[in-house]
Amino acid sequence: MHLLMEAGSFPISFTLVYVVGFIAAVAIGSIAWYNSKRPAGWEGKDRPDFVPKVDKEDNPGVGETKKG
Image 1 (tube, rainbow, N blue to C red):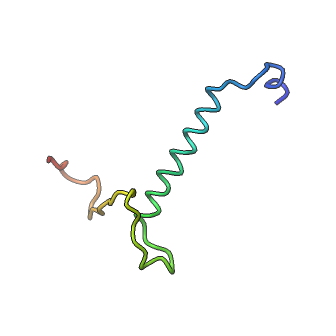
Image 2: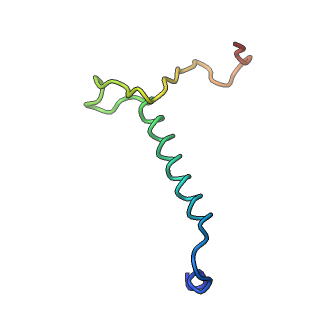
C-alpha cells in the first residue's frame, strides 16, 4: 500500500476496471436472481420488464445445437 502512495495517483484504468466489473456483476447477478426460484414471499411478484426471460432446458449443453 505504501508503494502505491509513493507512485502518486492510482491509475484511472484500474479504477475503471473495478467499477465496470462491479456494475456487470450486479447486473448479471440480478438477472440470475430474477430467473431463479422465487424466495418465500416473492412467489406472486411480477418479473421486471428489463429482466430477460431465460427458458430452462431438460439437458442443457447435450445434443445438437439449435439453429434458428
